[in-house]
Image (tube, rainbow, N blue to C red):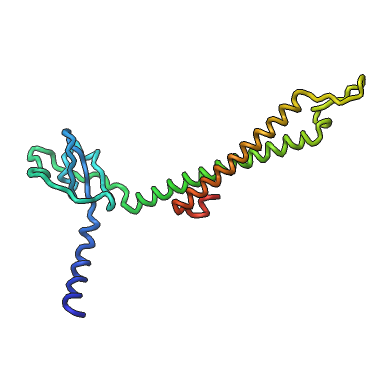
Length: 189
């Protein structure tokens, strides 16, 4: 192995632990934003509100003169309780996203199922109105008489069919959005 390759390898291996060092951010009373990799430098009154930054949040920071200096009168610093790692945060975000998508699809499928069931039950009553008590035979004139409920039932079936059409369109839109966002198929059930 050439000397140049060896030096690059040693340099890369030496940078690994430094890149893994957490960065802390806090805001002071004046609204100034401060960053550090040493939690001991965070003033005690801001320590509880400090945040550990993940890799995508870390960018270039300009440091003003005097920032990061320790107050000699301050109490000895203790490190804040360690927060979740970057990967734990990402996994938590992924699980929350999965729950959200699954709940959206579950609600869409339940709405369609409920409407289909309602239409089927109402249609069954409309198919045999005499057995359902929606029409009665008038012996006086020998004709069937429709109840007011029969027309209400027909209107409810029409509205439910329109609602079912809209619910299926909503499901299609949700599925297209999921495809655009690269949501796995198993989350869509």
